[in-house]
Image (cartoon, rainbow, N blue to C red; front, side):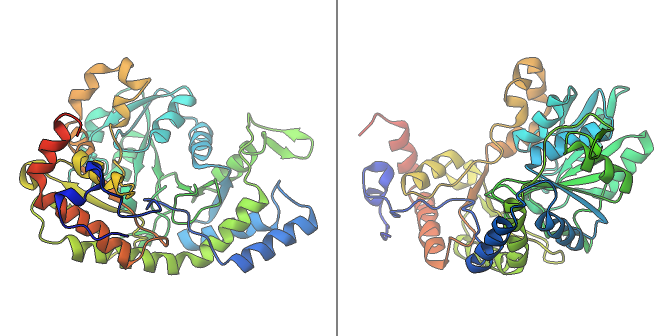
Length: 403
């Protein structure tokens, strides 16, 4: 790792990068290796690799305990978990959701033959704005999907009231929110269902995976059948199903991850506080805050860059950092409504989401997680501060002809 204090030191202008190995926003967390391999050897010895073995049951039980949701149905990924939940609830027509989310949220709905209706978000929370949601409801609306962005919970109660008032279904995409709370209550038991992601980059991973948490026994039973081709019994198919089962090796990985979750959240919080300390005082830069009154997993360290105040844009900062092997990421650029097939279908919608457009040009996620320590944060923060110090010169050289 190189110390950099001058414009000429920056890799984007030809100097060696600060880090030999890339720093990722979400490098996978690995639980205790010895215990993990013991579980792997056990399931191999028993030759029970999928179809609802003991590790799947343990993983679902631990998730139910963590989320205080009475029913949890694990699946092979969160996208299929969301698709299957939409199908199980019988939604049709239109579904209101944010554009400021990962594209899978929209695709899962569209894949089931429904139309996503993109709604704007609150500029402070980055989550669905309930006023905008209510204004978007039509006779074709069947459901609402809220997304707990950065693990910070949606305006849950207002959305539940809107859904109840209009007779609509309500799902929460909780991909970011494992182990988080809203008004002291764990994420997982709100709405008709909440969908978790256990992709490799999430705070707990199952290599690939997802799960649906719900208070409804009937919904959980239907989801359990649907993830297994629709089988209700060995020789009886009772519902249209698919293959969304989670394997035993994935579930075993998830069990180990849930055991390690408190320690990983402590590391994430330490990193978040270190970034806040290192980046404090820079004009036009805000480290997105978490509510200390709630439980958070601190999985993401996100900064909001105001180009006018900072003297440098978010994308210019990103270019500088990535040249140094700091793989900072734009979330959720450019917004689902700017991606296909939605962009071509509703070109007019781009002007209807001013907050989303504003956010997608400003937010930047910085590397964190168990692969990052104080030394890496200090160097990354030093690079960010150098961007502010030399912003005008950086902008001029980046926009000029190649050197």
